Amino acid sequence: MLKKLLSFVIIIFTALFISACSDNERQMYVGKSDNWEVNYGREENFAIKYIGEESMPKTEINYIIVQGLRTTDGNSPLNSAGVMSIKRPFREQNDDTNIKVTINWEGYSEEFILESR
View: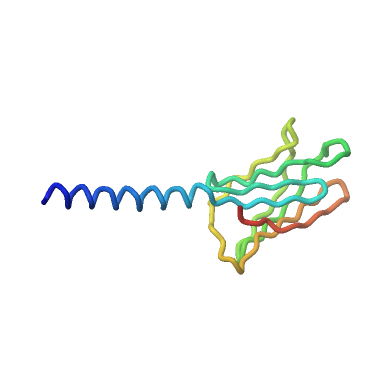
């Protein structure tokens, strides 16, 4: 009887652990504009990628990320693949809170919202 009870408890804890981990791993926010694509996920990085048809910006880009009451901004160049990565602790969003991204470069500006995937 004790063996059956112990086996049952182990199975329940394993199932709970797996379901909790799988939900966290899937949480990701993505957004896209005419020239930019942004991904933000559990690895705690914002990946900003240039996807425009014109040549890649040669100067630093300015980014502003607004997440609830938290704002992160800065200037940085893109790497040779047109990507910039920003380290920032991951914070899951409530349904009523958006992540707004504004990117400014070479006299242009685009703003868009990241959506949960």
